[in-house]
Image 1 (cartoon, helix red, strand yellow):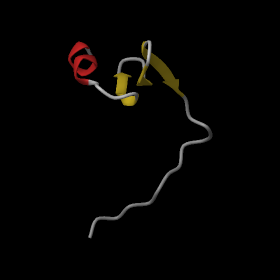
Image 2 (cartoon, one colour):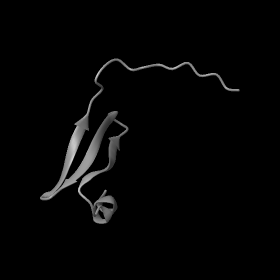
Image 3 (cartoon, helix red, strand yellow):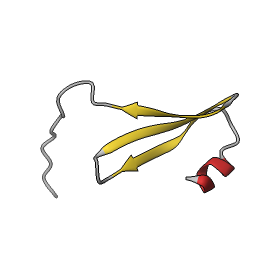
Length: 54
């Protein structure tokens, strides 16, 4: 994550931070005073899409 932060030069969304062990996903956001980790939670039930290979 240090590498990512050192290369983030603009304000706004930087990237995802994911803890696969806990299944938690966070957004890394840069602002004037530094960075914030913002929790991401589903807004509703997961959507399933049928897929068939061609």
